[in-house]
Image (cartoon, rainbow, N blue to C red; front, side):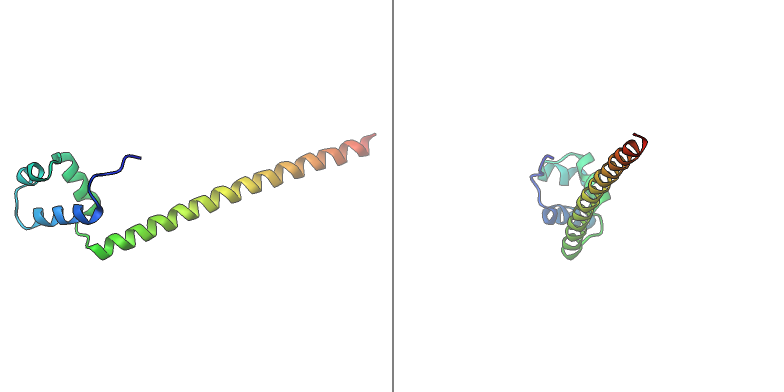
Length: 97
């Protein structure tokens, strides 16, 4: 994933400038960003403070860990089911002979 040249803290400070009344075209020109980027940031980070950003990062990290745990457990579960089916088929096959 491409990394931004701006940190979340810097993005929030740019958005705060916009909330303070600086026109969006001037903000975009000053910071070298497009209007689309500004509005994407506003949709994602609008109204946030630095403490909110820290909590957001913590939640994203926890979500990543939980998704990884789920994926690992799903693979284990599938392997156990496949192993059980194979051993059961062998047992039934040996009973038929």
